[in-house]
Length: 116
Image (cartoon, rainbow, N blue to C red):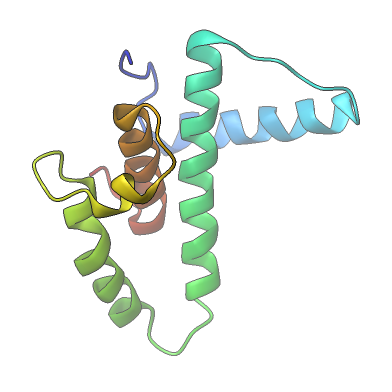
């Protein structure tokens, strides 16, 4: 899989894409929208990043966001290290491991508000 054309650390770009995606979803209604190639890959990365951000927002309502994030970091950071065990990726259905790792990394970037 080729690298994404997106810089997941660029919050302004991701926010713009998220707003665009929401508008396309509303306009499309029940009509399926098909994206292929780089557009589909980048869109999946944006979804994963947004999902991580949503998870962070939910955790923020808990008693101790910092401790929760530190605990999750201990679990997830080794899982996005290409030289690590990649146990979470290994548990995913068979497929493109590089793509699966990039999606998990994008989720972590959204969750931890960092670029892994």
